[in-house]
Structures are given as C-alpha cells and as structure tokens.
Length: 409
Ligand code: ZN
Ligand code: ZN
Image (cartoon, rainbow, N blue to C red; front, side, top):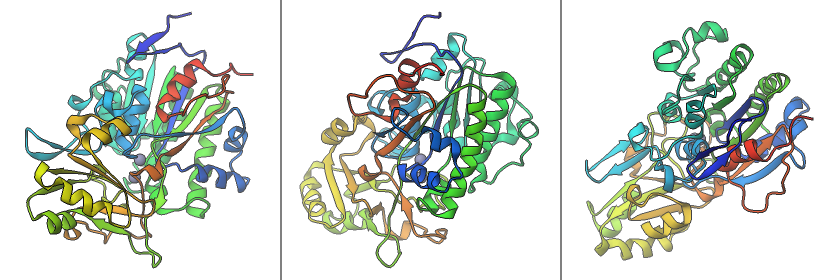
C-alpha cells in the first residue's frame, strides 16, 4: 500500500485500479437522461442510478478553463487562480489570455501523482487547456486532439498519435474533436494502462444541440461506446462536467443579449468602464463570445450609478462588487474586475454590439457562464460508499473517486 498523497490540503488514496476521470464539456444533466431513453446508451444507463449518479455544482463563472483547473486541483479558482479564459492584467493594462502556466497558483493532483511514480495520461480536445492540465506532470502523456498531429515524445510524452488512434486529425469545430479524445484514451488504456487518466472534451455539440435532439443523442451514443470499452478494461470511470448549457434566445430565436459596454458608455460616459468577458477565447464561432457572466472595471465615482441602472434592468440576475463576487464564487480578487454581472438563464452578456460577430452562429444560441449553468453531473461506475452530506462540487470528483468508492464487485 502506497502512502496517501496530499495536494492543496486534500488527501488522496492511491488507486486500486486505473482511474479515468472524464470532464464532458457543457454536460447539462438532461443530455444523459435523454440519451438513456433512446436505449442506445447501455453504459450510461447502467450508472444512472442511486449510489452511482449525483448532481453537484460547478464553479461560477461556469466556463471551461476555471472548471477544468478546479477538477484537477480539487480547489476553487480562489486557490488555483484561473478564473476565465481572459482577464484584464492591471500591470500590462490590457486583456490577456489566462492559459499560460504562469497564471496557475496550485499544484494539480495529476502532477502530484506522477511525481510519486504514477503513470498519468491527459487528453484534451482543445489545445488551450493542454499546458495548464499538463503542468509539472512527470513521465506522463499530455496532448490535445486539436494538435494530435504535432505530438512529440519530448513535449507530449507520445508521438505518432494519428496512427495509433487510426483517425484523421479532427476539425476544431466538430464532434470528432471529442471523439478523438475517447478513441485515444481507449488505445492508451489498452496499450500502457496508466494509473490515472484525465479526458476533457469540447462543448461544440452542446452549444448547438439541446438535450434529446438527434445531434445531442448521437454524440452521447458515441461516447457511451468508448466508455463501455473503458469499463470492460476494468478501470474506475468517474464522469463530471465543467458546466451546463442553456438556450440564450428570445422567443423569435434570435440571441438574447445585453450589450454591457454600450450600456455602461451610455450610463456613465465613454471611457469610464471597461467590460471584460472571460468567455472570450480564440474559438468563438459557436457562441459569438457571449456568455452569462461578465466583469467590469470601473472607478468608485461611477460605480453606484451603473449598479443602480443594472439592478433595474430585466435580464440581469445579479450585480456584485469584487469582494462580494469573490466571496460568493470563490474567485481570486486580483483577477476579477470591480463589478461582476451574472445574467438570467436565457440571457447573455456582450460588450458592444459592433464587437460581436454572430454571423458564424448556424443554430439558435446556447451558452453558459452563469449560475443557471452551475448544476453538473457526477457519475461513477463503482458505488459511492458514503452518503454525500454536503453540496457536491465537480472539483470533489478526484476525492470521491480515490477515497469514497467501493472496489469493483
Ligand atoms: Zn466548457
Ligand atoms: Zn462553451
């Protein structure tokens, strides 16, 4: 028996059998319930039951990077520091991407186990997460489907990935990008049986298709096939999500947007407020950089006027100052603006109307970011041996998987 490992104040037992943690991007619980109804998802059906399937909460802002980092560190963004894809760097006085490892303030459970001798493999759909997830992993594998053709042993711990998987390089805007993650995961589990594997997909499908539609069901049926294969290899499988997903449209099907920069310019004058949308990333075609969370940098003099205006506006769910937002959502104060705005379930927040290109939206807008997308699934193929007493979080999944599951029966 190896000694338990402490990471960021939490203690993790060694795995009895390989553990595969899957983060399904944008997995509203209904996607799972709906695909099971088709009768074509036997694996998911087998674990969608008492003792195996739970609902919990993700981190707000309900975006991809903050939640993936929470899952692998076991901590909220106040500890690991990653609270969006983008933030306003007050020193540089500009908006910068937050996907460099220099912004990460905590160790990952993946890295810690690898440093203690565990074989670790990480596969992510988009390359934007790869460096953060792979940070300080020793002698492991870490690559993205997006750049699977460029893998080298030095950088990724593996090469010739396309040949190994037997699939072509997928397009970054496709379901294939996620399928590649699973296909590669199964191949690697068959060939080298890593002790700890982390698979993270992309929400391209969830942005486009609502639960129960053919587009969504086909995606989950594909996933079920690979999960069944992993299950048959005798591994623990733990599934969660980075966030949920909701329709963000008016009754006529057009995007339901509040353009905050336009509004702020009108209320407090141009140049007095800067709206940051932390959902912004280089891949915006499927959501137009529109989510239900924004932060605003604004000086004290103008704050009250803007707060009052926003509070009276339909579609705005919550307006918090920096201290309130960081306390409620467990965020790092120095990377959040003076105000945090969360919109209603079916409303998204933009900057200026002229800055959002919605021409790439080929389906009614679905997105995330708010409190309305906070509910996420936690599913296991082994029974949880304790009754969850508190609010479960997606970032408890490693703790639950390593410390609280029954051995295979
Ligand atoms: Zn996501
Ligand atoms: Zn998304």
